[in-house]
Image 1 (cartoon, rainbow, N blue to C red):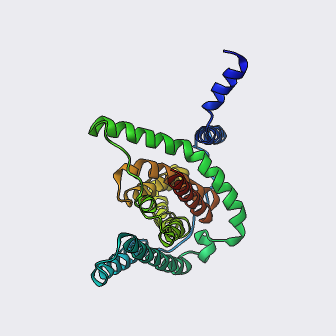
Image 2: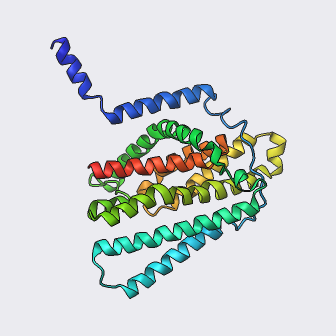
Image 3: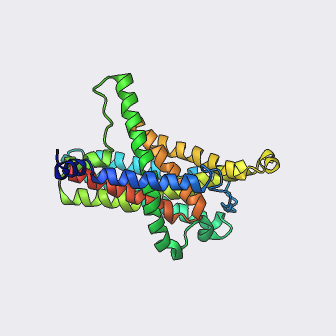
Length: 294
């Protein structure tokens, strides 16, 4: 084999996925070295002063679930004979409106619960340009962990349930593939890229993670041991577990947990909620582009 054939064979293995994963591995490796394997990563994380009662994060969650479930049930009774794509469109409209309603509720609760109102919550429009660039790099850094979790999930699934096991695509991706009608696709893409990331990050990062961190840092042993950074990591782990199990398909839990760790870390490191929102939005957009390409 001559040099030209060797180069051609080697380049055939270099795909976009390979380049993305390699870049992510380098970024993640650099982060591990810089932070002493993560031990010093959140030593400078600033607490978010708030007066949220324990039940408060559940209020927008229950509002979203209640409004969406009730509206979908009413729509099914009033419009029982809709074609598949029209039913998908109606359901998507309801879910989108429900999420936007919950976002409005969260913003109101953040204004009255955080010491610096929305800025204390992590919504400062001046940080948006910096947060978007950082979100792109953060997503690249966590991408190898996502791929690893997907590989492990498939491996264990085949080991437990047999060789026919496959990870099912997300429901929205299935709808995009099933219905080529433009209104359905536009609404699903808008909801998945622009609405859901805002709602879920405000809820799970802004409210639940902040609440869990405040509770953990309030324990007396935390003050005595001076392990506040450990408590921050623990709050990220717990809120990430909540985020993962809130999604209906258990097969998606491991990669969603890994993604949530990256988003939780980005929130604590920057103090900005826009950063995990952008990470979430970029991830959903990438998944949709991959689904449409396939």
